[in-house]
Amino acid sequence: MNKISKLLLLTLLSSNLFGQNTLVWEFATKGSVYSSPVTDERNLYIGSHDSCLYVLDKANGEMKWKFQTKGAIKSRPLLYQNAVIFNSTDGVIYAVNKKNAEVLWQFKTDGEQRKDMWDYFLSSPVFADGKIIVGSGDGNVYALDPKQGKLIWKFKTDGIVHATPLVHNNQVFIGSFDGFFYALNAENGQLIWNFKTIGDAYFPVGEMKWKFQTQVAVKSRPLLYQIAFIFNSTDGVIYAVNKKNAEVLWQFKTDGEQRKDMWDYFLSSPVFADGKIIVGSGDGNVYALDPKQGKLIWKFKTDGIVHATPLVHNNQVFIGSFDGFFYALNAENGQLIWKFKTIGDAYFPVGEVQKGAALYKNTVIFGTRDYNIYALNIETGRGMWNMKEKGSWIIATPLVVGDQIYFGTSDSHRFCGLSATDGTEISSFPLNMRVYGEAIQHKEDLYFGCFNGKLYKVEQTKGNIEEVFQTYGSKKNYHLVYDKNDEFLKGFELYGQDAEGAEKKILDLGSILSTPMIDNDIIYFGDSNGHIYALKL
Image 1: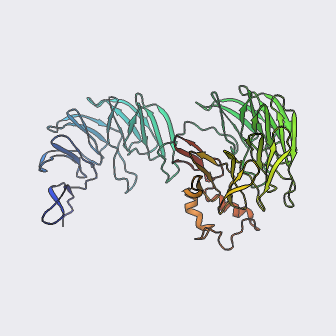
Image 2 (image 1 turned 60 degrees about the vertical axis):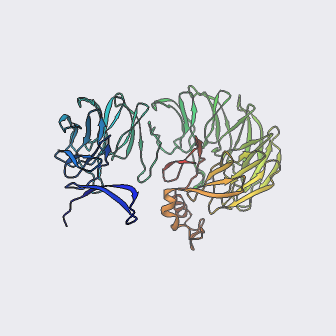
């Protein structure tokens, strides 16, 4: 049997004789057909591996003409006025008269190449904004004059470009084998942004306009203030950079960062309030800075690491410290208004406050490492209520929804809801790992991430919980930690002799430690393996 590929066009009408679709016509080329066809009123245009572009009569499959190139045609042709424009593996983009195959123009690229045996296609040309736009195996994206084939602009990537461009709002969106997805100005080909993919992940939207390198990790939520992007880093510096181009606007050097232990994952995130940037530091201080120049306005010294994020209300700063105290400070001058000492526990007698607090009416609510969640009067600092979570830290900042608070726990592995008025438990959902990030509300549902690499949704109206996403690390490594019943494997000890090794296995799951955010029904979050996700809700 000869290896001639056949192009078959089938009708969707069933045969009365055989109960099968009726073949209208068939046409044999002399090569494989990877090209998608295009049609006009009478004709079908399609390319073949035999180096020819074919024009066939739609009605009966008869060939009207063919045009021979020096390479395979593996892209969808483009019909533009009286021309059919297509790409070939000979490195030439052709425009031929669609009536008689007369060459109208040719544009020679810097050459085609194939990545591997699975690189089947070429970029298909598109027409937009008065230009023909197409990618090439030479790594370029080209914009050509459609009437003469002259170069208008080109943009160089570091890999083969066999993707077909998408043009919208005067922007060209296209990917490359260099692992980047690009947004280009359709007028001049200038880069607007590029996004680095993460291997096998697909992100329909996303961008990396710039990145700013510090010396070490950035583990705080950034703050947007006017033209500035302000964040805290473990190098002991608070940075303000221009959010358009990453130019450093100012830096403030603290007295140095430090980490309490392997579970001290976060830094204090800066907040803007009352004309000041307020942030805690591993040096034990709470700082108030001028947002425009980064100059010190005041600082308040505690006796422990301050990695909690400040809560500012009614000209007061509420913040906890690893010294086991929760503080209320005057936002104007940093003077102490009151402080509250946590109870402590036999195993954690200091009662460290690791993360931020939430406000409910006249109370401020926060969790600690002494297994308690506390509600204090914001005016006096006296306790209103507390709830002890036996055997488990409460690190996550509570989320207030109506008259209830929601938070995940550490070692009791659950997500629960309490009355914000008196701490009475209202709901509890079991998990198989800890939660440190704050939950967020979207419409009637709550979302939060877990150290097991899963994103969960709590439907408040139905009172149930469901898993909505699993990170790539979790899919890959889940079986190394958990059995088929979602319980720890026999012999796996979270806090055994090799606690650091166990923690590494947990983080290899792509743990979701941070608080997600939602914009336009898309939830964004990161994981411990460096992946950033955008998930349509």
